[in-house]
Image (cartoon, rainbow, N blue to C red; front, side):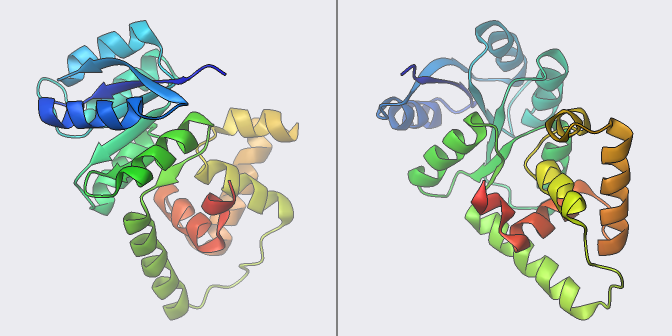
Length: 216
């Protein structure tokens, strides 16, 4: 079986070396290229077409957020896993909007990094447990403190929300369920209205609470 090809974008050489050792120690993956700044990362990743780009957030010339946006514009199919020390919701929300498929903390164990790489490579999303737990707790607290009417979602509304949380586009969801993009958008809007949520990060929070991310 072919190995997963991983591209590392990280400005600290010692961190890159550590990541390279961890990844190359696995039987199912290998490092295919590296970059120390965002501009070089975009150029090399576009040329190498790796299975997963491991993207640091803080880099010179072009930060990880801008590099992620640029890469997704140039190569929409590329899967990007964010590696960062930041735990703020703002970073997470911006990177999800940019098209990142996962978010793993540098301070987490190497097993989390490897699990995240495999999840993103297979087409799923991955949130570091430290972040997922906090998001789930915040959403659960909000839900407990609010009276939300009409929160019974239809099966199709649940299916659409789950696919959105896992990172699929409206077009991809429409093809999967053999419905129109407008129908997908309608299901999404109805579900968000019923749940009183207004952003993708809220959908991810709800998906975590429902256990959908773990089931993927």
